[in-house]
Image (cartoon, rainbow, N blue to C red; front, side, top):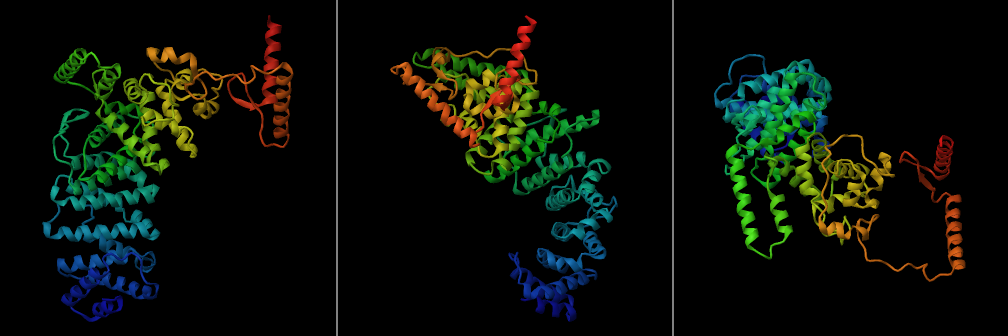
Amino acid sequence: MDAEGALNTLRGGDAGAIEKVLREYSEEHRATFKFDLADEEKRKKLCEGVFKVLEKDISTSCQVTCLEVLRILSRDKKVLVPVTTKENMQILMRLAKLDDSEASLEEAAHFPVIVESLKCLCNIVFNSQMAQKLSLELNLAAMLCNLLRKCKDQQVISDIKCFDLRLLFLLSLLHTDIRSQLRYELQGLPLLTQALESAFSIKWTDEYEAAIDHNGPPLSPQETDCAIEALKALFNVTVDSWNVHSESDSHQFRVMAAVLRHCLLTMGPTEDKTEELHSNAVNLLSNVPVSCLDVLISPLAQDEIAQEATTLDESTQETETGQDETREEETNLKYNTMVYNGMNMEAIRVLLDFMEKRIDKGSCYREGLTPVLSLLTECSRAHRNIRKFIKDQVLPPLRDVTNRPEVGSTVRNKLVRLMTHVDLGVKQIAAEFLFVLCKERVDSLLKYTGYGNAAGLLAARGLLAGGRGDHWYSDDEDTDTEEYKSAKPNINLITGHLEEPMPNPIDEMTEEQKEYEAMKLVNMLDKLSREEVIKPMGVRPDGTMAPLEETLCQYQVTKENSSDSD
């Protein structure tokens, strides 16, 4: 069925004939996303005709069919130009039950009409700038919030909730004024958090702690889709929320962080859906003020602490009975636990696993990896228990230093490789993450990465001469293993690994040969410098890089001042 045949029926047919023809058109073009330019005018007229039919008093099945056709036609931006009017937007809003009344939704027979109307509005708002402007004039966001309140406790209408949330996400994405309206005027933060909470069917055991059923079934596809749409809408609403200015804001963000912790510990119907769910949770956690992220970890109950201690005691006894057990196996036992200092670290463990999966993908690091790295960095900087747990997982005490830090399959090896990635943003956040885990101490960072891998970060921070960063951390000292202490004198500080002593090539040279080779090197460097192939640099007294002439002058001035003072 082509557009012209459907249009002829719309002009002169009765409701039954219209429904039949439009259903044929819908079934034929259900998977069509690219349209023939030659039929553009016919599709515009067909779109106008469908709106005229929707104005009439027709059956529910005919309304659904008309809306399905309209949804297909609204995929074409050019078709929407003449039909995106205030009157047509109001028709769709009326069919979607978008109003300011407090009346509950009608019987289930009308739900397909609501869902299809919301789908049409999603397409039209996404593809038409005029629709985006009209949505603000028609107060569409407020109507969507009202509809969301009506269906928040009814599981039967999860499709309505899902597309309501998707439309709120699109509006807040495409129109900054609507984003602000949602946040402050419509109280979108608590409303969307409730929608997210409803998708997970959360049962609270404490103010900021939800019950976790590790043996429960995964989320259904509908619940997962609702949760993802709520997460995306919340991201837009909270995009400028790094600073908390009131106690009520802090409470609301803590509640949201608790819901997100539950989200991280929840599985979707498929592995891909689980990753998408967790990815959106990570993005939203990046907007949560860092002071509220302590909710991600929770103290263990007394019975859980006792059970954990019993488990560790049993494991220790088993280790003691086996004379050939190594300390590395004991270390693995310690690092595989989800508990640290009496705190439940399950959510942090999920974030670390998510980070490693994104690293292993090997592509789209900026979009896929930097959000979780940034989140873990800020958590580690602000919360001591989180930092110490992550360091135990990522930078365990060094034992084998025969390989370069970037060689291997551990998380540490993977992160060190990222420190020299071609993408500046990726290598900066990877280096920053490791630096924070080392309490921003240069000597500690170099121990795990080598000077060569860390040079970029140290140059940017003005720490090439050593020292530590600006943030304060606890003064507890790192303890080196006996293996590392014995190997330390022979570790190459540049590469960060143990090297066998190499014969010195100049040992067998005469003084004249040494002088000749030195002058040859000086002349080569001078030629490269004059031709501006390289630019000799030095380190200022404050640890930053500068041209060599400038640094020599500064050191000379410093030396003279020191002599004068003496």
